Length: 116
Length: 115
Image (cartoon, rainbow over all chains, first blue to last red; front, top):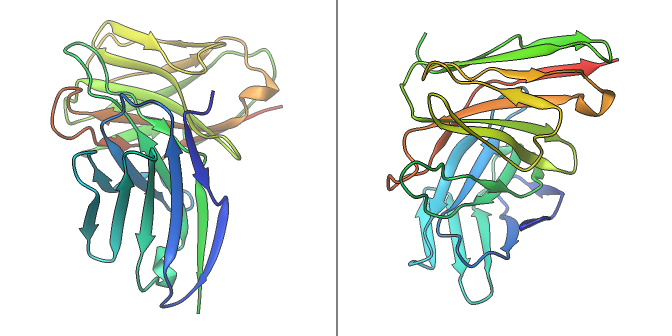
């Protein structure tokens, strides 16, 4: 059961352009929505995250837009650079209770290539 | 070295053999996780642990066994490896399930090939 759907699978953007990756979720109990960045041969690393009480969060060139009513969130990378070429995963989780883990449900990933 | 490490980084094994993948973290994080990464499936949770001696199944636990006798170690065992278990395996750790941040820190991965 795919609880977090991510699109597109792959994306090619020119240097300086805007990269947009979209995710949709089903479980309304989710209350934490992170994006992870993964470079080849490395483990994923947290890039930016948002909670459903805000509609947008910006960190440098990276922005998460969140639409609670549509159950969708997206990652925007402004002024995309070749160094941004990586695989990006959206994820979602719900607040854990004492003694339980906050499990992340990941999307299937988007491979971003930024060309010169 | 501080952080989260996995060993081996690469492993080739034959069908039917038992394989153990190791994961070690130095942060004393309570939570640890095992994922497998396959093209088209993203990261899927195999097992997780909230503390030493507390483990639970994730999305795809069949064919895998975990243990956690010490907080810092979380080995994953494939009891009888099958070709469908060829994958890249990631271990991750997290400070607390009830903290304000649920950030998971990932290891470098183990690429396992079952022939």
